[in-house]
Length: 256
Length: 256
Image 1 (tube, rainbow over the protein chains, first blue to last red):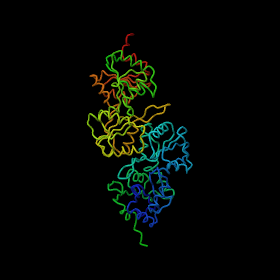
Image 2 (image 1 turned 60 degrees about the vertical axis):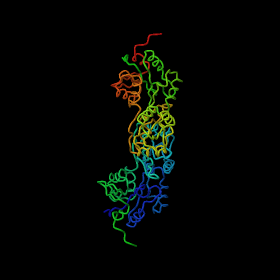
Image 3 (image 1 turned 30 degrees about the horizontal axis):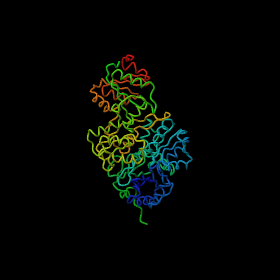
Image 4 (image 1 turned 45 degrees about the vertical axis):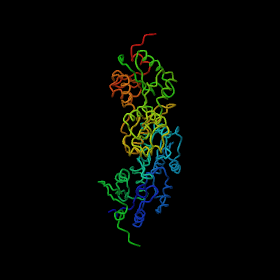
């Protein structure tokens, strides 16, 4: 069904792993894709860890991948800021997001000097940071959110607040909406994959578990998609578990 | 114009004081109301300080008032919970809100035991508290917000996040909206004044500086209102400064 696709972009949290646990069978699916000669990418809205941390996490879980194949919304936001030459950015996010920005020479300035702001997930977010960000939001040119995810799954079925929890409170307190959300469902990361590989949108298959981010992004970009979900979505190919992906993604590779 | 009103309900932040500074002339207006035989009340959406703290703050600023005349959204929420006999309430708010609840025998339980939740302004709000509140929101019967104020004025023209900053992030992360907002513009506090004094809505004059909370509340309850603002609102009597209130509120008291 997706034999003609030349690359597969996997979501991470909920698709490849959940917390610190690899999802059963996904490593085989990824190896299968590579055997079929497809490129593999990993796109995550995680903005509180660096690309490098996520790359190492995947390797430690036994997923064969390269640093270049991992894209995060934090890296994407830093890349956007770098390319658009946004000046004097106040980074409201984790230390990792600040360091991700630094790598692209996007230096975080003090709130007083801010002309633009970037908001990412911050496990150390608190009232004082909310106050600072709300005041910065009122005076800057552009406010960019890494993403607006509501939550991600934590230990013992608890939900952990996503970047959207930070964004919504800053928006509410300042009365100013963010200008741009760079993570999924924005197509920025997918476009990056397409440009790196010189592939057309229809040649990249998106595999994810979140309709509102993964599948909507694929739809906006014109890419085919598979959602791993027990719920059936009218306009998406849906599988209940990872095992079913093997046959869908392409003719099984010949045994070696 | 408001000669027939028998009580005046003043908003606090922005009307009576701003931060730690009394607003010029408001003490004279309050004395004037009392001389005219009108009852005086103070209704605030502040939910991070107790009634007692605000009462003492007013007295220290030279405002003659009694404890009974001060109503806060935190006290009102505790009163609501007490009257509705809500059980096992998790209080997501300041220590002062917890203590305000205790005074009405509304004891804050641990998140695991929660059947209802109360959200108030908390200067110590952080990621962990957001995570707890979001998970509690998903399982309880009722979620009550003290108010949804965006911000209040802080030092040096900075805005300080209001209770709505907390509420919006919990709503966004959990996907569950609060069931009830007890502070202004809800009429709960104004109804309390009306019942305590046995007065009809039209006999209580609301004086405030915030259209969306003070004036909307008055409108919903059927009470007359004056807004102190340089902006003119179609359906509200508007004065630019506190001095103009003297003539509006009633025939000047005879000199003693």
